[in-house]
Structures are given as structure tokens and as C-alpha cells.
Length: 303
View 1 (tube, rainbow, N blue to C red):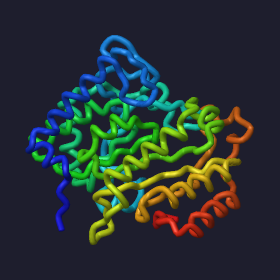
View 2 (tube, helix red, strand yellow; view 1 turned 60 degrees about the vertical axis):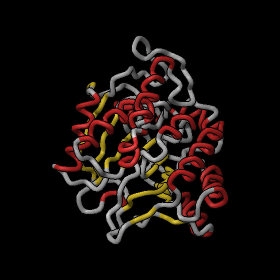
View 3 (cartoon, rainbow, N blue to C red; view 1 turned 120 degrees about the horizontal axis):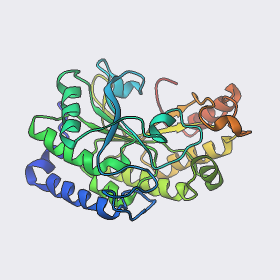
């Protein structure tokens, strides 16, 4: 079976162009994410610090992602700069907080997508921290499809997403890959400077699940559609991890894919926090893992 992304049908019907034009209007009074900054991004910046031109730190095949994305040729990552969260433990803080990267036109972004497909033969295009540049991504996709682009799109985000923006992406995104960081608002405020993260992420992930359902893979075990959730376990936050796992079990499709990650290490400003200034212990991770197994969650094979 050869998978055909739904955005190809949206392109043919003219719906994709309508989505592009609707998304681009948002920049005039930005509500693209739940911060609802209401700034005109041509002239000023809001929480994310981004204006109307996409900023890309790097792009190319990536082999450090989940195996279901990497396959043999890699996941075609495009790393965007800036972010709508302020995680004090961010391991890519030079990109997300300080905006390291270069401005690119929508046409150049389209050429990156095409290069990942044609030159590098990646299995997908993996949009990393894409939320604040959704209008640019949609315009670039429209340009790329006209030139033969047809890879599955991965929306690799922090989970702090607007339902209205997600609805613009319905039928456009093939694989949603959100971080599910917290269900404890005290943690989300302390570590990411966003108190309403728990209520937002629950609504967002339910919408993603509604759009694409559980993760589907082909005969070579390469994902082409569905929901893949990442949860990075934090030291001292085991109770929150268990609550997140319970939510996934009770509220989402049975075939949702989970990567329960143990690779936390102190970075950026985490050294100044008494709970975050150490690595996750083996015992903490094992207790989280055992809880996920008890719930019979569909866990990433790298575990």
C-alpha cells in the first residue's frame, strides 16, 4: 500500500489554499497559540518573539527520532527557532529561547521540504517546534505540492496548541507528535511559565487524536499517520507522570503510541532548581515504565 496524504486532496479541491489564506490573516492579530497575544506580527512580537517570516535553525535527515519515524533514510527534520513555551530545562534553548537560525522565505521552506523528499529520500518531513509558524508552513506546503511534494507531515510540538489552529491543520498533518509535559499546573508554571498548560494540552491532544487516531505503520514498521505522544519524565515528578499515563489510557484511542523518555539531564536554567538539577534516577523511570505496562499502553520499541 502506498499512503497518500490527505493534503493532496485538499490541494486539488482548493481547500488547502483557503487554509493558507485564513492562516496568514492570523498574523495581523495573532491568536495562533493559546497565549492570544493579539499583536500584528509584521510590526511587533508576542510571547514567542517571532515575526511573520519563518526562522529555521537547520534541516536534514535525522536518525535520533523514534524508529517508526526514522526507518532507513531518516526523518526529514526542519528545526524552527523560537517557541511558545519557556521551559527552564530546554536542551535546545539557543534555538527556542534565543532564536538562533536564519530567516527563510516560504519558497525556501518549500524547497527544504522538496529536498528532504527528493535528495535525501526521507520517510517524512518532521516540523520541529512549528506552532508559531503555521501560516508559513501551510504556504510552503502549497508551493511544494505544486512541485511534487507528497511525504507525510509530522507536527512535532510542545502540546500548547490552539484548537482553532489545529482545525486549520485537519487533513494537512499526517502524524501529530506532541510533548505531553505536565498535568500539574504548578509544574507547568514553574518549569515552562504557562499555568494553563494542563487544560490546554488535554484539549489539544484529544483534537489530534480525533483527527488522526492511533499510530499506523506500514509493512516496514514506518509510521505514516496517527498520534505519537512523547513524555519526558522529570526528576521528582513521578506522580504527574502517572497521571499523564492514566489520561492517555482513559481518554485517548487504544492505538496511540507513547515514547516514555528517560533522557532528561539538567540543561539551561535547570541547574538552579533543587528538583531539576539532577538526572532522572533508574528507579523513577522503572516505576513510570511499569505503570505504563500495567495500563497496557502501546510503548515505543526503543524501551
